[in-house]
Image (cartoon, rainbow, N blue to C red):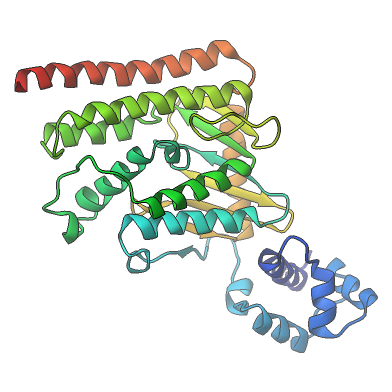
Length: 340
C-alpha cells in the first residue's frame, strides 16, 4: 500500500470509530460525499483515491486532523490523554473517565482487549469498591500531593451512591468486553505495599480498618480465581453468565513492566497504557499498535494459560498471592495487639 492509500485508509478507520455499530461506513460516505455505491466501494478498496475536496469534506465532517493522520511514521507517535485539570482530581470524575473510555471501546465493532497487568487489575478492583476508593485516595494524597487530601486520614465511610453506580456501570462494561489478561507474581503487591505504608505511617483514621482492606484483597484474589476457573468475568458475589464475558487469563513467571491495553476491533485498533499514576495515554498510531501487539504476543507465548485449564499452575499462582496477603495480615494483627 502506497503512502496516499495508507492515509486514505486511516481516514476511513477514524470515521468507523465514530459510527454506531448499526451504521455502515459505505452508507455514510454515500450520504456525505454524494457518491454512488459503486464509487464509494472503489474508494474503500483503494482503487480510486479520495480527491482533495473529498478528503477536506470528510475531515471537517468527522473532526479529523489531517496533519495527525498524515504524521504517522516509525519513531514518532501522537498520544492523547486526559489532562489532570479535566479529571477534576476527585473520585467521581476519575471513575466517570474510566467508564466513558470503556463505553467507547465497547461501541467499536467486534471488540476484544489484550492487557498486561503490572500490579493492580484496575477494572477487577471495581469488584471491591472500598479498595478502589483507597487506591484513588493513595494516588491523590501520596503521589500527586493534591492539597485537598494533605491533612486527611483515610477513613471508613460509605461510598457515595452515585459514584458506586458509575463504578458498577464501568465494571459491567468491562465484563462484557472479551479480554486476554496477563498476570504475574507482582499482581496486587503494589497495593499491598501501599496499604502497609499507610498502616505504618498511621494514615488510617482507624488502624483496624487496615484488616478490612486486607480481607478485601483476599476476596479479590478468590474472585479472580473463580473467574479463571470458568473463563468468564462476572461481578463479585453474583452468578456467572452462561455465555459471553470471555476471560483468557495467563500467568507470567517473570516481571511485567507496565499496564498495557491493546484494543482490537473490526473498526480499528488502539493502545492505552497507564501514565502519571492515575491517568492513561492512548494512540491509534498503526506502527505503535503493531509493535505493541508484537510485544504482547511474545509475552503471551512465554506465559501459561490458567483459565479453564491448567488447574495445577492456576492453584499454585493464586496460593502464592494469598500467602503474601496472609503474611501481611498476621503482621498487622500483631502490631494492633501491641497498640492495645
